[in-house]
Every structure is written in structure tokens, then in C-alpha cells.
Image (tube, rainbow, N blue to C red; front, side, top):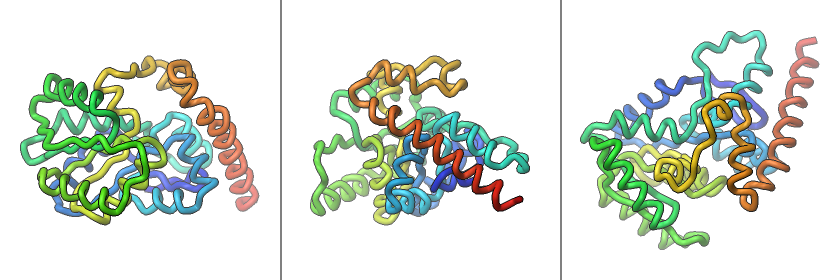
Length: 253
């Protein structure tokens, strides 16, 4: 089932279903793109039709934020959405790593060299069955055609079939979309999952994640980077959802 929130179409799935889908798709030798969209993603997509189209052409778009789930249920009061819950990128990454077999080969794309080293150490300690076959910390600039060609070759040579992409929003979403069309891998745009699992950033307490106030915690930890995201993104998200609810009521009256 798909539910529309703002300009984006979300997949109604549980965390466990998503983890199993990733594991299954990675063995099909087909390109797959998976996105994790939150209130800020929806706000950005509302200002950029190309970005919205990129995400909507994915194979799976998960509700990365609790407010998105609330909005989806509020916009669809007549639909009994069973099993729809927040499907958080870091949780999916940990679940897939935990359930990996030798047939699942992982590639880490994004972040800094230091974070990638810490991430690999953490994965080896916590998920010994998960095989990391390659990593790549690209420079902080727009990649050239040659850069992308060489990147694809490194991923191919590694034998990876799952590529975790942590390049930040919206850059990582475009990259996941590109990888789907370029390589037979399951690519996932997982945002801050690298930092959370590596331990270079602390996650918000569980109660804040469930109450929809995680953004307050993250903003307090990274005010310079996240101020625009929350001061602009959150109000824009609320306006979009409210406008959609009013429009839907008008159609049904």
C-alpha cells in the first residue's frame, strides 16, 4: 500500500518487513533504490519537482520520522493502516547487518575516513556475520563523470550487493537513484546512520523518537547544521499536511 504525504508516496510497511525486503532484494541481481523520508525531505520535495520525482521513482520510500506516520494516518482517517510504523534508517541498517549471511555483501559510501573506520570496527564487533567488502569517503564536491565511473567500478570490483549511502539530504537520495540505474545493487540512503552506529553522534532517547521530538535533541547537538532544516522544514511540513487535509475534505464533501 502507498500513502501520499505532501508530494511523496510512502510505503506502508513495518520495520521487520523492510529489513526482510532489503535482504531479499539484494540477492536478485537487480538495481533497487530505498529512501527514508522525514518532514524535512517532504518540505524539500515540495520546492523541487525533480527531487520529488527522484524519490517517488524509488522501490521503497519509508517513513523516517514519527510525524510523517502521524500525518499519514491523519490524512487517511478512513483507512485502517495496520502495521504502519516509523521505519528509521539506522534501525534498518542495524537489522540488515544483524541478519546478514555470507551472501549479503555490504559497501559503505559516504562520511569521513575516520567515521568509516570507526563504523567498520563497530560492525565487526556487533555484527560479526556482516561482511563489509568496501568503503568510500568521496570528496566534498560535486563528482565528475569520471568520479562516478570509477566509483561504480570500485563497487563492482568489491562484489557488493548492498550499498549504504550516507551523503546527507538530498545528495544521498540522488545517488541512490543513480546507483539503481547503474549497478545491480540494493542502495539505501540512510543519512546519519553511519555516525549513529559508529558512535560519533548520539541518538535521541527512545521516548523522544516515539514522541516526535527527536528533532529537538538533534538540533541541540548540531545547531549550526540543522537550524535551517528545522526552522524552515518543520513549519513547511505542517503547512503542506494541513493544506492536503483541507483539500481532501473539500473533495469528499
